[in-house]
Length: 604
Image (cartoon, rainbow, N blue to C red; front, side):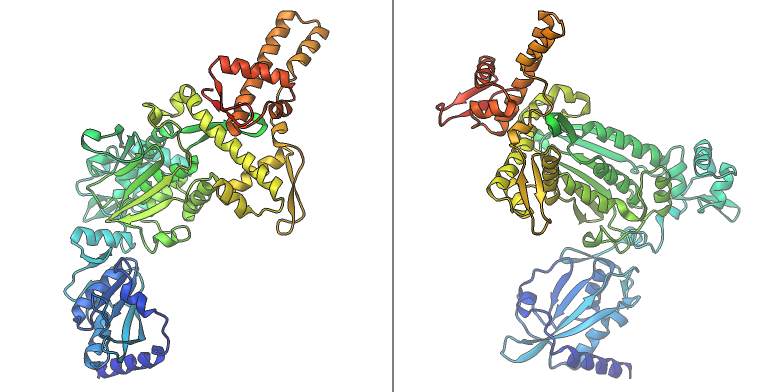
């Protein structure tokens, strides 16, 4: 009777959806099988179809197109209603617990030229762990339905929130393995008035009693243990610093530093953050008011957030690997054991939030490290964009989540042996080599935008993005900087208005400079200062003028002496003297003729 009812349902769906061809037949034939798509012949057995359905439900969901051979030939499903009915029953009869599927029938023409249909079974990702009728669990990895062993299956339970691994008792652990002094400190921090043992026994089941014996949870050991690595050997953070932009092996191995940080969750996280802070590059460029500004390669919040997230959300049931942080010259990678938890997926990670280890997350929130409701991920995307960097890249590998931050900044001299140690500790010694590149980039982008406005005052933001290669927020930063300098202003609305030049770009660069040498000498004489004091002042001013000449030539090697004189409010003769000194010092040289050549900055 049930078979008859189900078949009637199937026919109802058949007529309901047969006129709706929301799936393109050519796409169904040609689309590569992958994480969320599989293609099967109508000859498939229901128990084998159930494996695919279970794998999709346990992972990211997906579509199964039935009636298409592996080579793309369309054979269809019409003509064997009994077998069709058996396939439609697979999510109920061969999956435990049952899997909800959305069934659609797509009109097609089979390889014989006859009208036919393709069966589409759409599977949504499930919050439960599913298995087939023989109690085997599967998980979709790429184009394969991978059978899970017991350990992997338990990890999936924890990832989906069916159980929390942090609540599982730790074999062999007792209250003597807990640092009660640290628990007391924590109780004071959160305002808990009772003693440490009472807190552990009455709050969050850190310690429970069964048959008269204490059971200490994993969260208790990781957060408050005297030596967490005694029970969780790989609950640690490994940081590897590489020279260059890729990981090399053997004779070409390019590892510069390889360190581990262990201990309780809090101290391990803080030590890792402190160390990475010494390894992040900094860059110096000419900012507002012709002052040098130093910025980090990545926004501090972004790389810190990845460390905290890895510690807070890693799957501690995976005992064989560490959290690994890899720092390259142009990108930063964090690899954390475990799949994305709950219903969090790559495409919704900025909006969907789920805590695999809620007790650990809440603990880190007390120390202002973890952010509530997953706000940190969305903020990380925004800050990377505002800094002009590409968006973070998330990649789910086999029970390992990989996140990459990429820097838009580049070094001029990648062959320099100490480029990889360009950190806070030695920034002063390496500042000169990086200054030229970043000054040039910053000033050049300002110059390009000014020239674009001069040529087209109504130019929209996408035009500025195209000519500079910057993000939308990066363009707005420069426009706002130019407005703050009084160089440009917006006339009219953002939609219908235009930009107006208020003064020349190069003239604005002398805004924070001191008086000319001649004025300094005259003023000092009037004030009764000695000739020696006046001479020192003049030399200091001339030195600053030379620095600005160098900056201007980096931004525009074709600048003429007249343009330099106008920008710096000096005489042409004064500019000639400064250029002569710079040439004699080997700092600049002239390439080509006086009329058609250009300046080249050799050193800073």
